[in-house]
Length: 355
Image 1 (cartoon, rainbow, N blue to C red):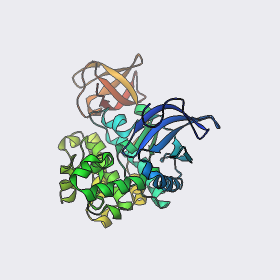
Image 2: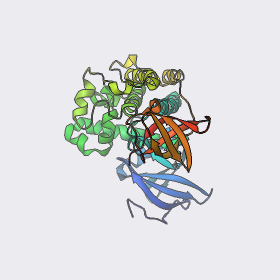
Image 3: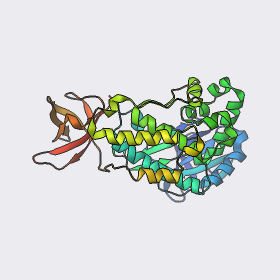
Image 4: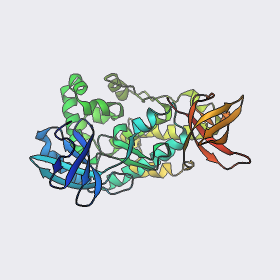
């Protein structure tokens, strides 16, 4: 048993706990079977019993958002003096595990596709009057392993809860922030106004958080660092730099610069200079990126400027100009898209996978 439930527990005579999934700063999450409809859901319950009323209020708010890029709220119930939120179960990994920890560098095609989808989900939520307030990699879910068949924003249902905890942590100072799991996770992605006046957090703060994540996925580093030192950097006038090595390959440099420019606009200290979520969608629509499936393979024959990748026993040709990030050598695991070519398919782009 982890949290209030163990496998087999029945909640509200409808949801049978299958397994513990994880927890955040505010809640426990379980995989549960809806025995009435025969489907699986993510069943969430707050850690703090004092937050029951706030949890219900947040669940009502989250139910107003309905979009393919947002995890759908399915049900709310109270059982045995606890509140529960049933949400669409997303079989996949969060942004941190699914991308940031998996690759040394994420090519700009994938970055553009990812954030185009996220901006759509954010636009719809803002249009419904809902501010997330806690956007960070653990609240972004990816479906489909390396192919990323779907991207979904989660935990709109606890947005206000997170906001209240973040406010309490900020008022309490550095020690409170350090002791708050929600605050620690959100800090690298928090806007200046969310730090200095968290009770005034609004739509532009979500845009800032999305821009901070966009920068991190593109460059592999957080824009303002981690821990309490990030507060000083976020509140300063410094603009996170674009690493020069990302501009070496001309095949990727143009799109890298476009994404970087968009991310830094999202992180403008002047709130009025940030794009709205709707404008962010429109900006992303101007980015040119392919949507081909991604595959996993291993380098079979690395030569001077070109070589072959083995994918399920089939050779795929690659050229070094198509490699994004660190170079590759024989036996290295790689991720790539492929296109028809004479004799063998052509791989582009190619990314090295962390072992």
